[in-house]
Length: 90
Image (cartoon, rainbow, N blue to C red; front, side, top):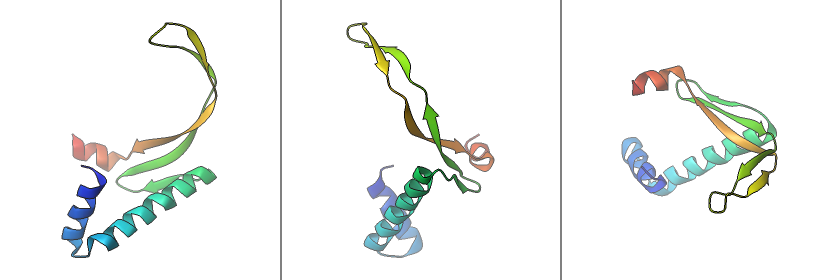
């Protein structure tokens, strides 16, 4: 499912316009991104938790040439599924 399909599904379920639904989704995603960037965890009970994770610098290999390359340290988003979501899938 892509964003357009999600908007269509939610707009139908909630009986609101697609434009209103898209604004709600965009606002939700933006709020999650801002909170995680700030260093706060965003926990949606029953779904999961969005966090910020630091990765150390490391050595890697170019898959085409096999040459060693240095991969710099970075900050990456992380999502941990909640128990209810995991149980739903199994």
